[in-house]
Image (cartoon, rainbow, N blue to C red; front, side, top):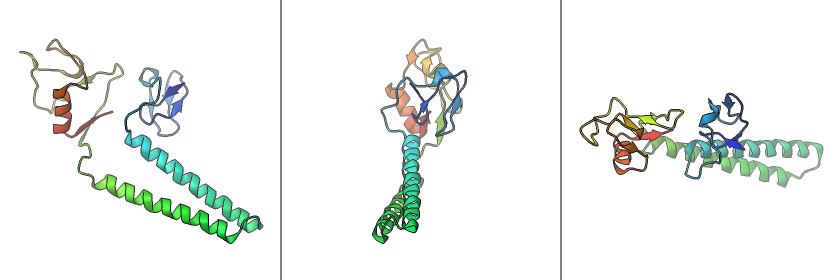
Amino acid sequence: MAYCPKCWYPITVQQECYCDLCGWFGDPREILAEPGREFNLTHTVIRTLELYRGACREEMVMEHLYGLGNATEKDLQHARILTRNLVHSLIEMFVKLKVRPNIPQETLFKLPSGFIPYPETWEKHYNSNEPCDMLIGPCTCGAFHRDDEEWVQTKLIEHQAVIV
């Protein structure tokens, strides 16, 4: 089983992989062997919208059953209330996502190798006499930088950047 690197949805491995859920398209070397464990905003939003779609479908089925005489008015009202409550929760979630102050200003994309070049627009970081040319991966300074290094995390926070 393989998983989409963007939303963790199970995908089929082929020469070029495509995620039916989020629309990610890429090389098989970029897919994940197991779903991610940390919080993923894209994954959470997609799953929430799937939940809403399911609730709307249930309400539609309940209306159909009510029309056929196989459900009561109470059952129909219950389905409508659940869908309405879910809509209000979705709106509240999207409003909070829109106004939250820590929305990433810059997105850094991993290369197929998993490395990330040092952004040219950022001020140079020196690990030795040579300026770093990689944020994550083998660098000209002689080090192999990882995403859990303190200076890398500091740069990401400073520039409000996120790694995708």
